[in-house]
Structures are given as C-alpha cells and as structure tokens.
Length: 113
Image (cartoon, rainbow, N blue to C red; front, side):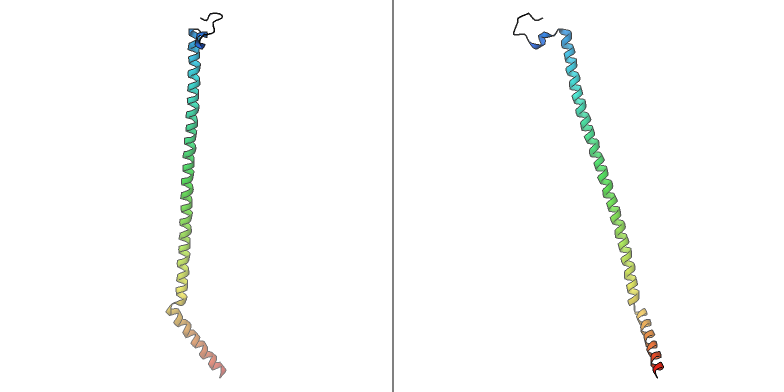
C-alpha cells in the first residue's frame, strides 16, 4: 500500500489486488468493445459493397436486355421494310405495272379518237 507523503508511488500501487483485476476487466471490455465496433463497421462495409455489386449486375443485365430487344425490333422492322421495298421494285410487279400503264395508254388513245 502507499505511504503518506511518498512522491514516487507507481499508479498501479494505488489499487489493491482486487482493484487491479477490475481495472484489467474494464480495459479488456473496452478492447473487446472497440474490436466489436470495428468488426461491425467492416461487416457493414462488406454488406454495402455486396449490395452495390448486385445492383450494378442487375442494372447491367437490364440494360443489355433492353438493348437486345431494341436491336431485335430494329432488325425486324428493317427486314420488313426491305421486303416491302423489294416487292415494289421486283420485276413481276414492274411488268404488271408496265402492262397496266400500257393498257391505260391504249384506252386513253382510243377515247381521244
């Protein structure tokens, strides 16, 4: 124990053996608490990172799906447009159009006479 008037007393000498044990327990509790808080922060950060990665993957897949559907729609529309243009320009329809025009010209010529 500490003597009255002694200036060179060590801090731990102020406590009895039971008090030192209690101090160690408090210190251990503080260390465990800090480790727990640090672990909790790291776990929260890990969950946040996983959430962001899942969100990014879903957004990417959705964008690719929309892009694919748009490309398919454009391709289908383009194919139909080309077929329609080809049918207008095809030789069979051109000869039909030419024959109709010649018949119309003949009818017009007879009407004028």
